Length: 383
Image 1 (spheres, helix red, strand yellow):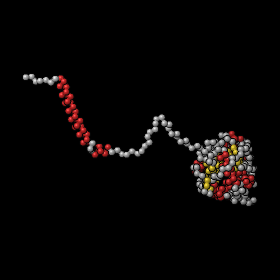
Image 2: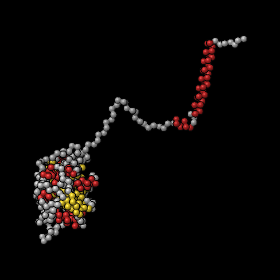
Image 3: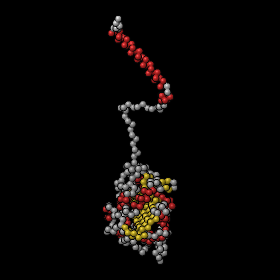
Image 4: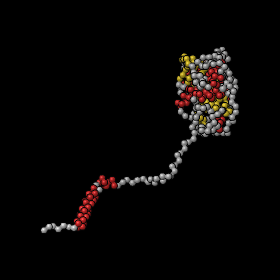
């Protein structure tokens, strides 16, 4: 008897039922394995995610980005650098080398000589400072007399701060102070340094063939040390690294009073220093005015030097008028580089005076512009 075959329709139904049963059994087995594995410690720990801190939802893609903060404007951005302004008995210049981000400015007050030449010399030396050039007379007596009044230096400094602000230096305040002189201008510096507060305030003294003195008695050429005592004291401080004192001198002779060679010798003797012989030729300035102040080309030729700490004294050959003027004409390559280096080593620290930044005086109405002083005076050491 032949076995009975199912109809095609019955075979299809049986096949589908068998597949359904097999699928159900497979899913059940997989679920059992999965539930068993997820109960392990590692999986359980990974399932507990740390709590997230609150965050802002992202901005819409078309939202405008926040504006970047603008850098603070430099204090010298609107500073007028052209020309000069008359300040007290001098002319205030802003050399091309000057820069101040916060309004603090260093100041060089130069006594006696061509104002434009001094300003150009500061720029050529790369010194970042304002420059006040004071011309008040022919002999040193005129400078001595003007600064005999105790408040004269403070008056000049106050006017400089006012004028710097009026020319556009925002937050103008005085930092370090250097005094410079050529020829008879030393008379002002001697008077200024004789006062304790001013002595403390001054950071540097630069003398360009500029220090003379009386004789102690008429029968000898012994230098009157009392007259140059403020310079000796400043030189001593410089030798100890507390100040900067730079002096150049010529060989110009004079029978009425002590020459710059004799006064420099007296300073070195007092400090127990000796000169050394040297030969050198300082760089000649590239700007035309340096040559224009001389009638002949009498550029400096160094003969000697003495140095200790920040005290520097250099002797140069020459005994004629133009040999004397060359000390002014070449200050950009003799005394000013030493000041650039000294202030660079100091950084931007203010010179303190009585617990305040030297010269940080209240601002006042602007200074007045007017024509500047004339050319350099001729040979005029004076007393």
